[in-house]
Image (cartoon, rainbow, N blue to C red; front, side, top):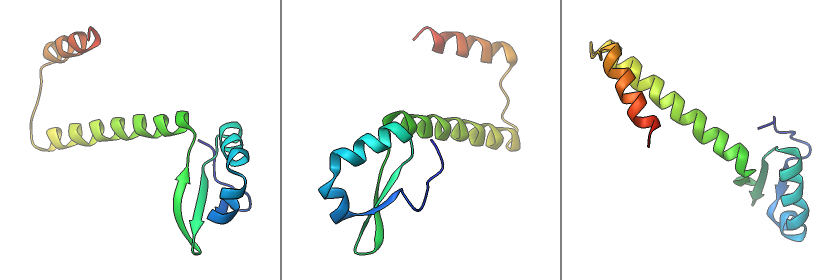
Length: 93
């Protein structure tokens, strides 16, 4: 996902409605999200599917890292051989 350009990537709902297809195409081409405002406040974000999936993937990795840190801090350990078996089993699914 690319950085939002404040001068181009924020649109009020009434302008978005009048050019829905244009905005969908723009988000798809630029890979930048579009912030849609309602009554002067940000309301929703239109986001390219691949950018959304990338965010979800990153959140999943961060969640795994946090869980691993918690396990380390609590002294929960898994033997290397056990990890290898779990990874091998998971990859077959």
